[in-house]
Length: 212
Ligand code: E4P
Image (tube, rainbow, N blue to C red; front, side, top):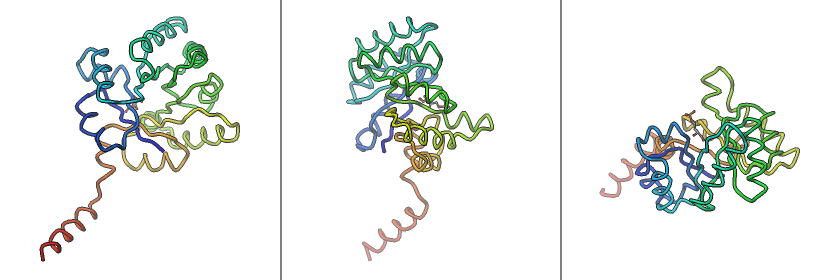
């Protein structure tokens, strides 16, 4: 069971990394755009913080382009970089190639068990089912985690289930319960995981009693 942070804001990562509870970072083109910064600079800054697993999405219409861009990312950032590829036929072909040469691949935008099967067969290190976006579209994201987990267990597939598009703390617990290996979460969700109203009330009482 591991937690990744889903953000391209370097200060947000820096503030939380020293908890020792975060094992990786995921980014995507939208998060990079929101940061307002040069992507390569963002990746370098994140790696400088000591992050050991950083998902970097690459662009391309063909497997050839995706492979070339994935190899370029690996040349730049070495093994810290996990190459993030879209779950399309071209992405799957690129996944197979890059996994075969020993690179970690994170297959993103996964919305079905059949896609997860293909990612497993392509040797993906991670698959990212997008829970929140499924819920946005009246599908049940958490059920997908359970379904993929059942198939992977039964078929001895080693691909790691990285629950993505997680928007609240309840979904984190449920995703792990249903078979996610990792949840990638926004910084705010990470902060909220530690909070409970009864903890605050109890602590106030204990602090008063310390002084009594
Ligand atoms: C994961 O890899 C994605 O970056 C992310 O979780 C997408 O989340 P969203 O659906 O909230 O944009």
